[in-house]
Image (cartoon, rainbow, N blue to C red; front, side, top):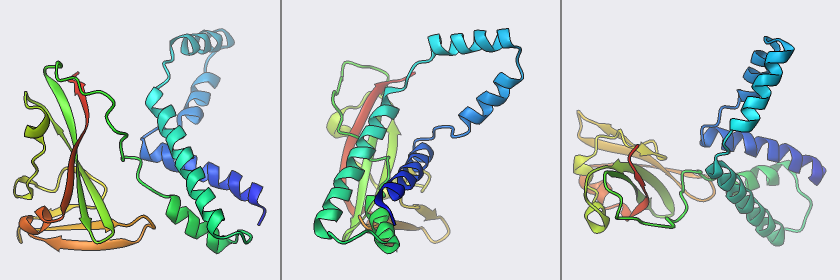
Length: 213
């Protein structure tokens, strides 16, 4: 397998993956082409000029692509450092598993402005069992800040919070289940009471604070 050919195929797959993870509409170009083809030439030109002048690039998407690319490059470099033999389909699959990671892992918060009132905190809770990890994200309003928000209890959790670990609360049994993953993409199913899940919490972190819109 030629490395150049694989790299091109892999990049296309990764971009589609990232589009899906950060909820970019992958049908945008197709839909726009259909709209444009239904218009007269003059209207097409007007719409094209209007979109070019008014379109605002979402800086976060650029940052996510840049960071995802950097992570992939570092992982590829480490992989090739450890194994100098030619790439094979099996090794490509193995490397894809190592590269794969959720984009919900936010960057460190660059600024925390407690002068903002009526804001929304985004708090990330990390669960870990052995090398297997999962995350829960909660959006919190109100007038509390800092330490007051770094308190999470599964006794108050209904399993509906945003998460990357298939967290579910089984009301009849008062029981939680989740699927944690390691860096290689291997899974570990965990279950237990609220107290059991509280014992798996290894970190609670404020990842963003923004003015409520």
